[in-house]
Amino acid sequence: MDPLSIMASVIGLMAATAKVSKSLTWLTKNLRDAPALANSALLEVEATRAALASLQRFLVRLVEGPTTMRRAAFIQLDQLIAILTDAVLTVSDLERLVGSVPTDDDSALEAITFTTFLARTKMVWKTDEISAAVGKLQQHKASLSLLLNIVQW
Image (cartoon, rainbow, N blue to C red; front, side, top):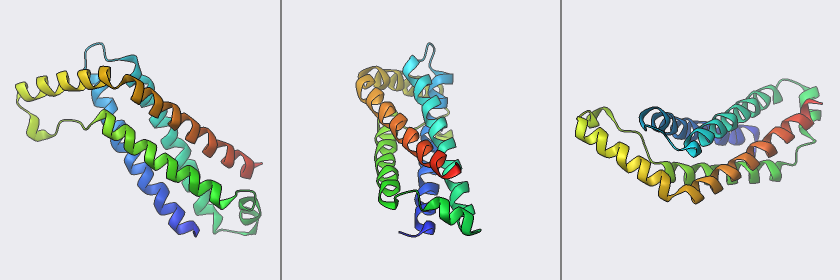
């Protein structure tokens, strides 16, 4: 897999984390006494997105010169692909569990109130699954950060 394919995967994953972040931000702002899990999930999704942005910057610099290429040799390509693949699956699970934010079409008060009720109910029912997904996301972020630290030394 070439750097451009990996970069496309990173960009797609960043878009998915942005969507989950938007949903979690809506939940934390619109649910009175939002579950602490929603706040911690939001922080973890944002931190993962920051790690992905760093990876993207590294991949852009990869084509700049031999110094970056020598550093890139420390990264096992199959490990990076495995991390990104698992991260995509985890973010997809989190997106499914959290749901989506109401659209402008849902502007009626009843629709928003019902959506808020459903969101709170979903967060309570799916606490264990959401916690597990957040834990996996932490592991993926840590792996990405470790790879980036290796090449930056």
